[in-house]
Length: 221
View (cartoon, rainbow, N blue to C red):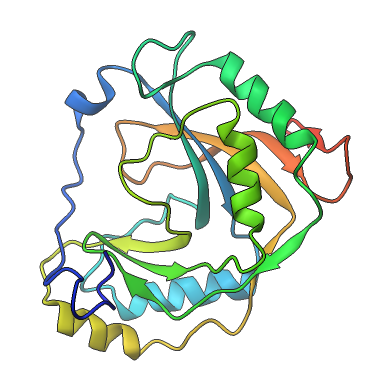
């Protein structure tokens, strides 16, 4: 639920505890996600300015590159045992599925900042259903690890203190909506250290949207 929903949304923010959660990762090390990275300097400047305006509310997250999460895969494992494991076979099948359906580069409209109870974010709109198309291609090979409905967004930060919903709404109203769109030319499969809340994302595979059927490449080193 969104804080912008006055009637049904949360009444206050939820504090994120930045600590290890061994009961979640159970000694599994790398967590895999499909993302759309934010590389536009103008949009990156907007995100940084928005974070500064909310700095007293949010945990800093300098190591984690701004991005839109497209699909949550799970813990990288040699074979799938637990429901939240993700195997090399599943990744291979996802890459193959995307190869025939990824389409051309595009742009996605960004809306004024909003918030979950746990995090402030920039909503990403998908009027043409492009995100839905990519997610369906990925779902062919793997069931997404997701406890709630998918809401496309770019996270600004997790909350470090409690704040009433009305205070958050007022603070968000003081931030102008982005004047640019999110340019999408690549889809990245990336992983991060499951022990770290804001550890850096490491790209493992890149799917380029410009070059048709031969559009899958490993990241350059």
